[in-house]
Image (cartoon, rainbow, N blue to C red; front, side):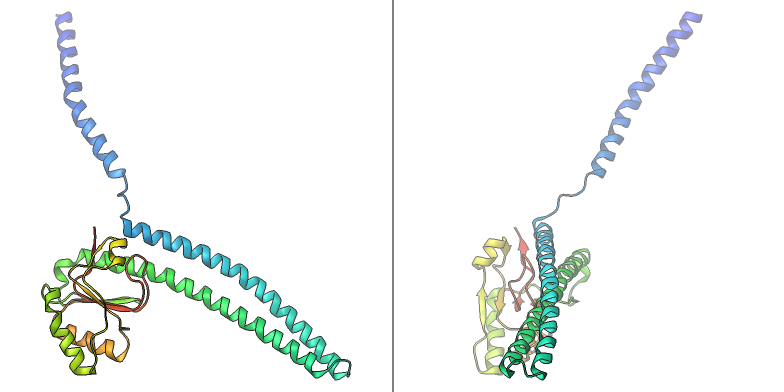
Length: 255
């Protein structure tokens, strides 16, 4: 009886091990799969590269700022000495004026570099804002009809229906009747820049207008009133916009 019992116990143990092994393997595979991060898409990589390059550029600017600050301090000291010598009648007025001009020149260089640092900070911040706005829009595509998405660099209006490039005549007529000049179309349909960035721009057109200008605002109001989708860019966005303009049509998808 003892041998039979041992045999049965061994069989049961082996069966449990065989049944449990696949399930355990599946769980491990699932866990391993979940732990793998999603590969970044090309746009996010482009943004990361842009931010990294801008930070490196900012670091070089900050080194220049330190140099120009030292130059300003030296120019201030030289001017102070020149004024003392001028008061004592030891140098001519032209020599004093040279030191004054030198100080103004160094101060202008310093102010310019400081402004570039602020601009670099703003560009980096804009990239993060645009990425968050795109992610938010992607989550709410079904709820996004006639919705405005605003960021520091662009405004996106999703419109009420699908708009076709063949319907652009209505927009051109409105602009000509309002401002007595043709609509300044920069790119009609697919352009070379869109090919390079791999953006599908076949059913859209880019208008060379600043969205905050008088003509730009009038155009945006017309588009919104007629449910025509648009994206209005106030500045350049890496991989998306080369500068201020109005994109009429759905956002260009990357291919």
